[in-house]
Length: 261
Image (cartoon, rainbow, N blue to C red; front, side, top):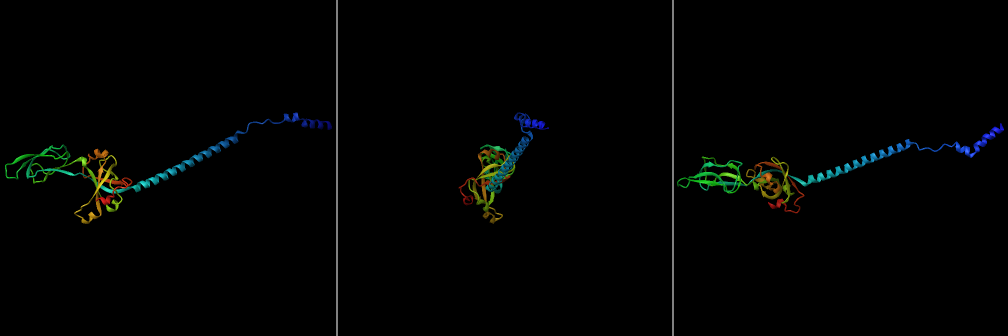
């Protein structure tokens, strides 16, 4: 018994034998590495989402601030009317209109014959004359039809120069105090592909014979179309109405509109 026990003990104490029973180290388990990778990816995704939300919030806040500033910069001036200075053609003496050679909305050149008239008011034999247009323009109205009598100085045909169209809007004094000559005003309405730019050219008092007191609280603002939009404006009919907003960030330091009337 003693010998057997000793033999076993010697074998256990033998370094070579003990080393032979050691388990060789193997590769680290893959599962912990995968868990760490998934955790890192989740963190990165969360970080990206948070950063995106923060960026969107900042961008949205900036947009809102800019929009509010932009809204504050624009002043609603009201409704403007497209206006043309009339060009009239008539006779200094009373006459019978014998023939009209033009029609409404027709374009004519300077010197073109508009109508033929017969003078009857000087006591002499009737004389036929040609009524010529004093300047190029577009016919807006035939004031006296063929066969009718035109009084001395009465318009027989009325025209306008499409190159001299402007927009006129009656603005309350309270609003006018925010405006300056030279400011850019944007006009939108029928016949326009979008809003077009105009310049606040002048201010003139509004004369209202029906309400005499109205002249004291409103003034007429004249808006001149920019050259780039004049071709479009020339296709419009005087009398049409348009919405107007004025950009108060333009013409800084210009003459106050309310003082220019």
